[in-house]
Image (cartoon, rainbow, N blue to C red):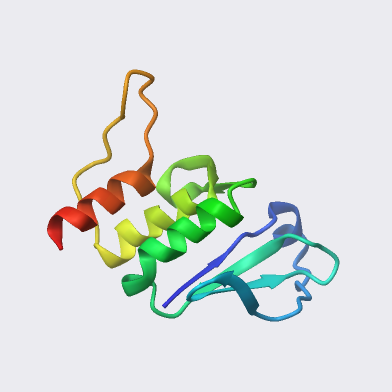
Length: 125
């Protein structure tokens, strides 16, 4: 199971509780989302079989939730789409960092962790 929560640093300093709707369907298989009562953007996600459904969750996130950027300080990632943050979680927690280090792709040097994790998973399956 994977649960991800996007925290707002300004809220965590005040110690206020986040009031939410509770988890509901995201329209992505095996991914539920939660919304704050006063917002129309999700702030929490949960996947119960992430180790098995990673590819479908990632493609769903790329298609439906690629317009917002997140920081993942423990991974050293800044301003990445949600599918990249989930790919780091998959690499770190499911693969337990067995995947080789992510290498830049193409002439621009850009890297897509999601693309490299999907390639790694296909090659080792």
